[in-house]
Length: 73
Length: 401
Image 1: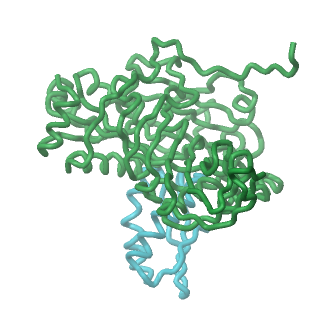
Image 2: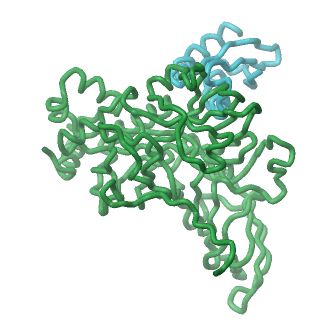
């Protein structure tokens, strides 16, 4: 499952990089929770929660339906 | 060179040439202004960021018996709306908060839910709970109303934003020794970061710096649907300093915009909670620029490197309304992820999403190419540089003399 999540993240990464940000996959739990670390300008951007939920989580869930939630740590 | 009427004829025939404000830069670099202006009919722009002076008005329809909300009180999902109109017209502002929201009592406050979130949920088709009380009259006897409303059932739901689409904005930093929480996001102490808020080379008013095509009546992409420029926005300030290329170096022009909320989309109107500051609404706006002559095309081809913004301290200078700038940087520098202020290299972050701005400009381009979106002639110009129109501070008069 981690590999599938990695592939999904690769799809969203160019969008994050266009805004000076990036993301690192930390963990995919057996309960279907993806833990990410937001990097670059995403790290201190007040809009990062929107990015996380409307872009990153949306694409990961679309590509890997087993995933229930995506959280930033 | 060409008129809007001629462009619309090409749109209807399906042979209009449309490029985004990003694509036109390469095109001009490759072919030159003259050739590019001959080829291109329309340049599309886009921006997606927090725009606090946004909101929506609703006519909820008359209840049986009738109630007069005007002069009474009303909330949507607990968030107060303005009722100072007739019987059943209300206005919900993006930054409105429930009376029992803790705000900044425990600092920094979380501001989990407010007007912006209600607007997004309504656009998404969710029900909202309306609670109202009125004083009652002979013709409007009812005094209490508690019901759910849905955007599809009410008479009008209109997004009416009195200031959007700022033509350039500050780069916010913090010179103090403690973190601060602002509408430009969290600013780390001692120049720990710099936040800015513009789509730069894609931003509508930066690509038409003298408002030669954008005016009252211009049809636009608004919140994923169609809207119009209804007036110049509040705090419109065309008189700020400009670079030789005509582009303002500081916050300048603004737009007031309007459109039917019922045809908009929740992904382009997003409620936002800003830690320690409040609630707002992220709004997606795209404006088409008709290439009527070479000069207009030349303005649309301005690159990030040519657009400058001012670095402002939000710990002291901004709150105390002290004018001035610590430094200036262009959008290419800002997008590189770091700028240098007072000899210190600091990381940058954009509150306005460039990738979403690209999406808007592409969407608008697709609409125009498909023949779904024709252009409008402005019916009145926005106040320009020559108008003398400026943004004045409040003249406080605590006592009547």
